Length: 221
Image (tube, rainbow, N blue to C red; front, side, top):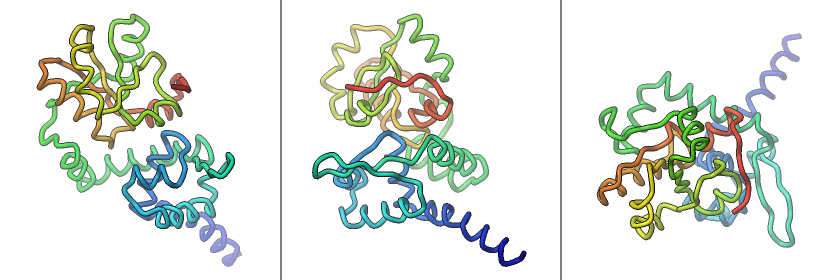
């Protein structure tokens, strides 16, 4: 019985080990936005293609990712919504239970104190979308937007934001969002718009949490 129990927990530990790498977690974070090729992941994560391939094989052998082939290209995706939920739960627990994680997040986002950037909750954003009273801006890369976005959101990757200032100034309230609570793009977008005299708010977290709360998602460019 002891050997059987040990075998059970050894198999459970395979998933834990797959998540036990900072680089693999970064790849999971990217794949939570939608499927990508090895080359696309390598560019987004600033890693070598061979390094990304090795990490993906670990995730695949743990049954956390799947692949599909389109011609000569191989696309990777998370194996299911349960994997997305597991990753989201890990982020929540880490932030709630670890002061070090919270401090590292604050340093990364550049938010030394609370209240620096106004936020909207998911429910508030749903209400704004229903009323049609806000311009909702998805500042992620366009391929992530195409893989899945908040219905009614406009794709405006962060690097293109300065070119749209005049357009945004002429509209109503601006709400930005990006990958999730650990993504810096929406914060930087709010700050950039503030320098142009545009008051914007960001979604309280991002697309990852939007998905894990089973809110509506639109696919396509």
